[in-house]
Image (cartoon, rainbow, N blue to C red; front, side):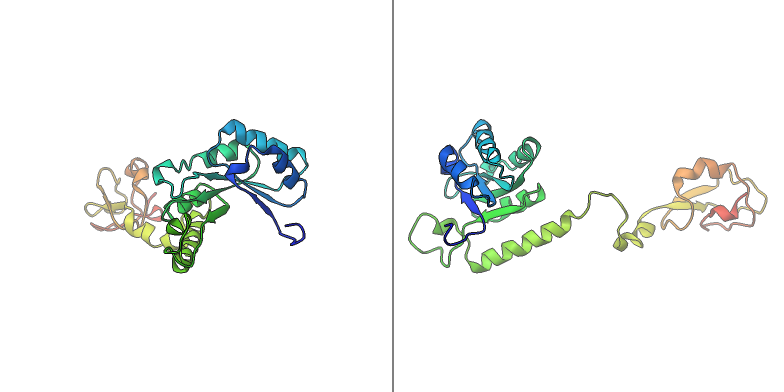
Length: 228
């Protein structure tokens, strides 16, 4: 593999306890992807320590269930949370289920590396082909992953551009329940209606004690500059 100048090494789940080989590969100094199917957290920790002891910090840990195919209910996607907390590494998922559900869930939980078996025909002989994805399926999965990445967006909670109009339509504002003459105290003559053209209902108590600067007609939205 070194003669072929491969860009990284993938260590399968079955070799996670072959620490001599894990160390040998890590010493090559190239990124390492380590699958962790059928292993305990203690075994994962041991392998990670061996890799990091070589000075190789380019490691990605993949949660994995080794059965072909594996059950969705066995996926344990929350293991990715454990890996992200316990180890300062990239996380990912090596998936052997029949759909892309687990893959999308993994991406939503922060997975940056996805392994999914690929075949030109599910009818081919061998244990991998029936649960592998054919070209059209694989392309669709990648498309859905890209959509998921877009959907993840930012952790900042804010009003996005497309909500700028709907936020007015969906929210309520204060309106006059009957005509209020200039100089009159607003009092209880308020009603909460859509759209939110004027003052928000959360300011109702403050508004109730103020006077109208001008006539406010029945059903008219109330604005701060109409009050004193």
